[in-house]
Structure formats: C-alpha cells, structure tokens
Amino acid sequence: MNQTRKYDKSYCIIFFVILVLMTSIYLSDLSIDMGFSLKPYMMVAVLAIILYYLILNEKHNFRILMYEKIFILLYMYMVVNGIFSKYAYMSLRMIINISLAMIMYIVSTDYLNHICSKKIINLTIISGSIFVVISLVLYLLKFSIAYQMDRGMCRLNGMVSDTNVYALFATPIFLLLLYKILNKEYKYIPMFCITLISIVFTFSRGGTLGIVTGTLILIIKNIRKESFKNKIFRYIIFVVAIIILFIITNQISIKFLGISLNKIIEGRIEDSGGSGRVDIWIRAINIFKQNPIFGIGIFNFQGYNLYYFNDYHHIHNTFLEMMVENGIVGFIIFTTFLISFFLNESVNEESCLFKIIILSLIVELIFLSGISFEIMYIMFAVYKVENIKKIRDW
Image 1 (cartoon, helix red, strand yellow):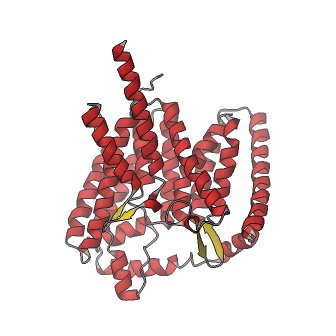
Image 2 (cartoon, rainbow, N blue to C red; image 1 turned 180 degrees about the vertical axis):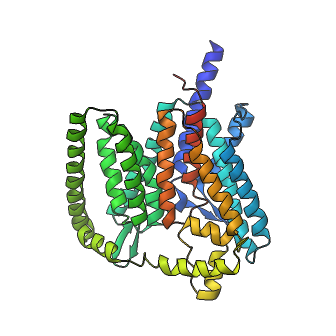
Image 3 (tube, rainbow, N blue to C red; image 1 turned 30 degrees about the vertical axis):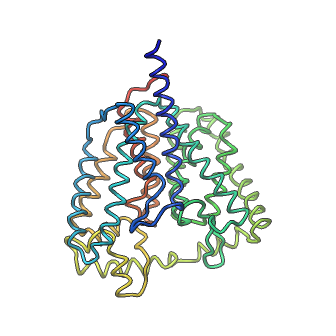
C-alpha cells in the first residue's frame, strides 16, 4: 500500500513537472539576456533534471536511435566549425541554446515515458491552448507585447518574439485539435476555432503552408477509415465551417483592429518578394560561394550580413542557413538526419501523428531560421516516446 501511494505521488509530480515544462516552452518572450537568451523552459528543465534524477532517483532508459546519432554528429560538427569561425562569440551563443534545447529533449523523453499516450496528447493540447488563448486575448486588447506592426499590418506574435514563430509554435496545437475532431471528439471544436483565428492574425505565409500541409495529410489518412457517404458529408461541413469562421474572423478584425483581412491577404499574395527574404537569400548564396565546403560558422550570417550589407536579419530559411553557415558538409549531415528520421518506422497511430506534425514544422522552416527552436525538440521528444514505449493504462 505504501509503495502504491509513493508511486502515485511520484506520478503526480512527474505529470505536473512535464506540464510546467511544456507550458514554459511558449514563454520565450520572458527570456533573460545573459549573452544568450536564458528562456523559462531552460530554467524549468534544469529543475526538472534535479527533481527526476536526484530526488525521484529515476534513470535514463532510452537507447540512442540512428537519427539521434546523426544529429549528435551534426551538433559536434557545428561546435568545432563555430569555434574557428569569424564571429566565434555568436556561434557560442547558438551552441549554448542548442545544448540547452538538447538537454530539455532528454529530460522530456524521461518524463513523458511515465505518461500514457492519450495523456501526452492532452498535455500538449493543454499547454499549447494556454499559450494560444493568452496570446489572442492580449492581441485583441492591443497589448504591445502581443503584436507587431509590419507594413501597416497588426500581426499577432503572442508570447514569442515573431509572428512567424508564433505560427510555428501554434501549428502542433492546431493539428492535434484537428486530429481529435476528425476522430469525432467534437468538444475540441471551440479551441480549434480559436487556434485557427490566432494563426490567421499572424498573416504568416509559412505558417499557412505548414498547417495546410498537415491538414491535407491528416484528412487523406482519415478518409481511408470511413464510408464514402460519411466522407463527403463531413468534409463539406468542414469546408463550410472554415468559410464561416473566416467571415467571423474578418468581422472581429474590423471591429477590434480596424483592418480587413481581405485587403491584407491580397497584399500578402501580391508581395512576391517574400518580405525581403528573396534579397537576403541572394546575399546568402553569394556568401556561400566564398565558403562552400565548411561554411562560415553557425550563427555567423548575421555578422556577415551586417558587415557587408548593413542588415542584421537572419536568412529566414533553415535549409539555406545550414548550407551557408555549415557548408556542404554540414548540409549533407543535416539532410541525412532528416531522411533518417522520416525513414524511422512509426509503429502506432500516435507516433505517425507527431511525425506529420514535425513534417509540417519543417515545411515552415523554409521561411524561418529555426535550428534551435524549442518547439521542434519537444515534438521530437514526444514522437520518440510515442514510438518506442508501451502504452500504459494508468
């Protein structure tokens, strides 16, 4: 009896800590500048390590998978390459960020392994929903922390630093809620609508591309489960509901923000320059040509861009960034890591779901510099746990 009570108490502690850790991931705007950005999740992860290994006396029980070994190789390469780069101090900042994200990944897998599959999905939805609701409320109330003015557009960025980053962070929540709805759990429809509205207010083309990719894959997978009549009826309702939701969102935008979504969307479509990204990509390619084999060093592009072009922007394309900063060698290791991950067999529906989510996030990274984004690491952690643990009925 005492052993059971001790086990139940440990489980409650583990559940609470992983909920706090996953929620803290969405609070990057509350970071502290210490030469690098000390984010809330980093501090929570350290406390989680102390609690898990020293107080609860748990052990790390996972074997290292092939795609993880390749990522470790990429990490070691980036460290060595960054040390000898022109802006080594900038490389060090990014190396610290990636190192802490990797630590969070390891401790997350340990905590999540104690939780059944259904509760893992619910944990992810709960933590993300807190982020989405707070961000949207602050945006509609016009708190400066929650929006950015960009070419006349009031774009939602919520509790993170950038509108496109918000769309990236909200994508897993959107797709998990969609998965629930497609599996006839209709109580999630209100939160799904709120999440979709918040993503629309980012006016992020990369975010739109990501959620469209994930949505199409989930719908195609779901179509195989139902009869033809059910398929047609349900998806007609789904399309009509999205149209109605857009109309409502447009009215909210006009009332609260004084802007029309129609005009903004038309402007985004007509903007063929990708908000200046094309010019940045051309510069990045020219810099790559000067250092094609080993690149200029991780997180060095900003320094080069400022020195040669008086512009402090990132590349805003993770794939191009890997090539420019880590050269052909680093790019090959990076693409090998991605290929190895997607070739890794998904043994159940839940792991397949999170692989689709990760694919959607990677699509969005075409428009973002995101090798250190913590949302990527937590999704990889959830995927690993879902794919290799036995489902427990707590």
